Amino acid sequence: MTLEIDSVELEFDGKKVLYGIYIKSERGKVTGILGRNGCGKTSLLRILFGDLQPKYKNIRSNGKCFPGPMYTTGKIGYLPQYPLLPRHSSLKYVFGLFNASWEQFTNLFESFGEYDKSRIKDLSSGEIRVIEAYLILMSNKEIILLDEPFSFIAPIFVEKFKALIHQVKKKSIIVLTDHFYNDILDVSDTVYLLKNGCSKQIEDKKELKSEGYIN
Ligand SMILES: Nc1ncnc2c1ncn2[C@@H]1O[C@H](COP(=O)(O)OP(=O)(O)OP(=O)(O)O)[C@@H](O)[C@H]1O
Image (cartoon, rainbow, N blue to C red; front, side, top):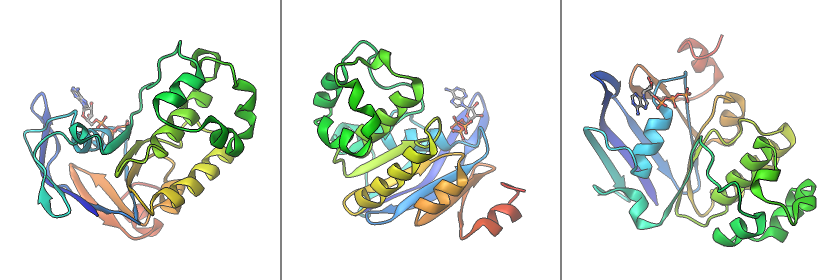
């Protein structure tokens, strides 16, 4: 299964944000997106998800054009940057909502076992982020988009997520972005850098340097 996007034209208030984009993602390979603040990473994920409509875009799934919003298919999961879960709901309730196993989760993230009877509002923002990222990643969707899954998360949990991503990529297309570029390079099979409205496939850290993304 493949997912491709090109011919994107996105502008806000007359300012062109994205216009030279080609991204190809496929099952079995994680696609990482890097870029400076404001270069359009979130916008690109939202265009793929379908809740941001640019002037033009061409999205193809398995080579076939997909003009409508992808989220209407129910086959795509999206971890946004903003909080996703209702604060007053119990953890058990949200796990039920996502059809996820609380036992499986606490087997992997043992320290969460004490939150057996807690509500979302009882957790720290980082702990909530762990739960949100887990629920989207394990949602069994054909396509999974993750916007900054590693931010706000302790290194020990980041390593667990990287192992999970490695498993999930066997059955889902995964596209993710983060400012933790070492983690993105580590977990991704294909990396694109967004710069000046365009995407460029990146082979290694050296190229990130020559593109001025890192020092
Ligand atoms: N709803 C909006 N209205 C106006 N401008 C917007 C809107 N959403 C995004 N932008 C602008 O579009 C550009 C790209 O924003 P986007 O959030 O996609 O960047 P990003 O690469 O995800 O940034 P960051 O790494 O800081 O999260 C920015 O200049 C931003 O100010």
